[in-house]
Image 1 (cartoon, helix red, strand yellow):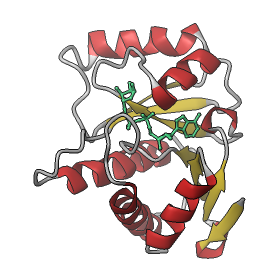
Image 2 (cartoon, protein in one colour):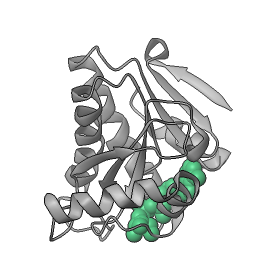
Image 3 (cartoon, helix red, strand yellow):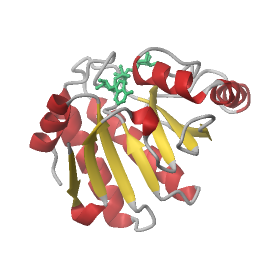
Image 4 (cartoon, helix red, strand yellow):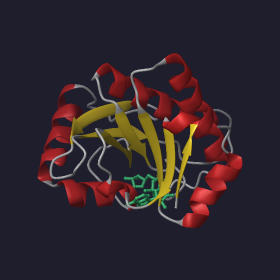
Amino acid sequence: MEQELLDGRVLVKVGDLTKEDVDAIVNAANSGLMGGGGVDGAIHRAGGRAILDECKRIRETDWPEGLPTGRAVITTGGDLKARHVIHTVGPVWSGRPGKDEQLASCYTESLRLAADQGLRTIAFPAISTGIYHFPKDRAARVASAAVKAFLEENDSIEQVRFVFFSEGDARTFLENSGF
Ligand code: AR6
């Protein structure tokens, strides 16, 4: 299942994010940047040691206390088809105020980093909707609004992909997205 939106600048699809042939895939990481479960584990397994080595360097030089929620950093894609991985830290869902803004920041910061590096195609997972339990419909509204606003301001990014593990997740996104 694939659906183009915004004249092809947005693509919603079902698949394995680690297989996407784009300039960068986005990792739903944690602040330690040392890998984990979910999509983070899959990216480190598929991309190999080079990604972890760069994450360690970033921790030592830029973020000794860990990457804060809503921020993003970029590394090599290692053995992945994607040349780069952008690591961002989504909020852990709790229902407290500020979670939507943190999630929106993950998308905006990742896109800003990609644009700053001259990257043109970027693929996102549904950040925070797995182990971090952010409600999927709410995440769809937040993510789509953040990406739409960014694309309206920036024309260097050619395509943003939303890659879902299941057809049901892709449908939930399409039903709630504001594209
Ligand atoms: N391709 C596309 N989507 C995937 C893939 C994949 N290969 N694998 C999982 N998903 P999660 P989070 C979907 O848990 O909620 C890690 O331990 C999944 O179905 O990966 O942000 C980190 O280290 C879900 O919809 O990320 C953090 O500690 C979405 O990706 C923590 O989990 C995100 O699920 C981050 O939790």
